[in-house]
Amino acid sequence: LHPEDARAAIDFCVDHTAAGRPHRFEYRMLAADGREVWIEDLAPLKSTKVGSWACAAQ
Image (cartoon, rainbow, N blue to C red; front, side, top):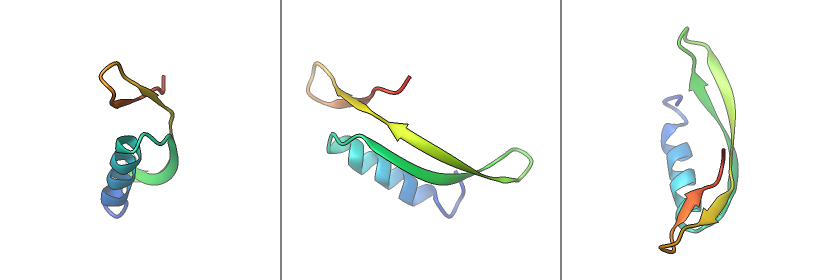
């Protein structure tokens, strides 16, 4: 994750997953060669047998 996006991206994902809301968001990552790369993250969720949520992405 890009250092400027890391906290917001992690918080967004954790909050939406905990609430059982599927989510889509974009953030930057740094490639091995230092280039800035934009990522689109799609996270559909499904309920687990114990009542929590898990990412259903494949």
